[in-house]
Image 1 (cartoon, rainbow, N blue to C red):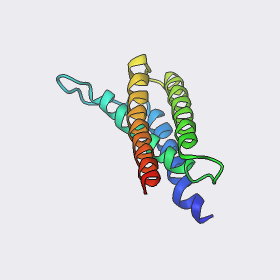
Image 2: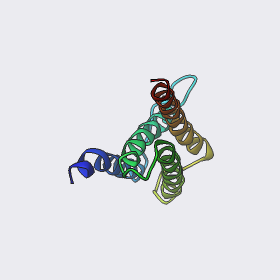
Image 3: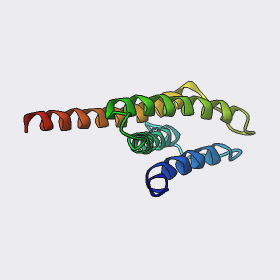
Length: 129
């Protein structure tokens, strides 16, 4: 139970928060001159979700290696991003687009790639020692 509360619950609650925010009708975001604020938010929210998903997946047990945890996290977050964009289509005043999905996936990919490099570096350090 302690592991669930520490590692899995934060990812679940954050995913629920994303769905709740996606369900707000007519949500307006400020426009920034060169980038739309909306795209930055998509990137950051899915970067955080990817981190929390990896943190959760890496604590499933010994059978799930760090690389398998990264792959599972990528599949879960990618699938969630697609479902979230479809969900937004049904919310009045909200729209979804390929640009939003690309930013979701880019944020998740950046974090997962950085985590992959970190795990690769750790593995090298262990084999050198």
